[in-house]
Length: 154
Image (cartoon, rainbow, N blue to C red; front, top):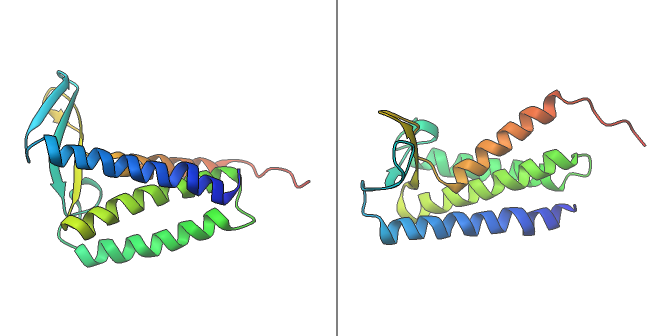
């Protein structure tokens, strides 16, 4: 699939889905409330995060926006670079959607909106969103591609 097609079919729709789900969270779930979906395992919540993964570096607004912009440029290069393989391009398209989603939140609200809450008993995974999911999946794909044997040259 061409880089432009990946951008239009992966990055933009995931960004829109991320923003729509965050809008629904803001509209229908009061801050710090939860809606049980699968009791004992999954809730929809409304929490905010001024940090990065797991709430690290809370309050570093400028760092997160600047780092996001730099990483977006890097991902655009990977997406459109002729030597990038299909998996790397797909991962770059995914990560771009996540960067766009979370940087948009930071610029609009000063924090990221998180709403997916998985847990077992009292053990909660930190709440996250669609953008975070896209970034984590992309990082996994980048790791996987780094351990694969390169395809033989044609």
